[in-house]
Image (cartoon, rainbow, N blue to C red; front, side):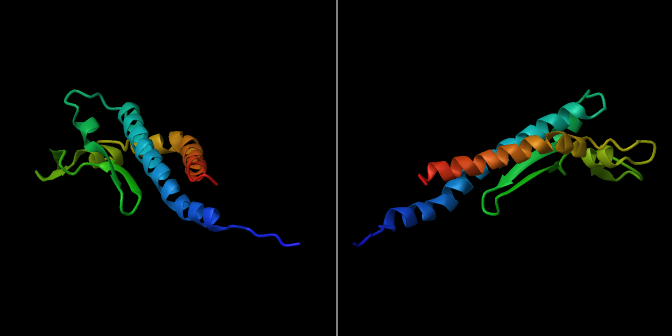
Length: 133
């Protein structure tokens, strides 16, 4: 008796897993970055008259490194001491002078952390399923 296993389909699927998983992770990481950005814009305690603080919170994704970044746009600035321009979001987030720190970005990340973990786990599962394994 002889048993033969054709591994070609399996090996082909294994080659597909990393790309399918990367594809799903890219989509999910980008989405989670947008969610953090939106939440950070909603949890800061400062009244928004000019929308400068909201505009200072940016989200960007690097496809090559698979890195999602939510941070402060250096192009949105205010006049600080002594007359120098400073990054407005960072200025409010860290606090300066009379300004007490408003750690709204950290707060947004902490609130979303369990959801982010679950979403990334789901993305990996979708990627594996998409590969046909």
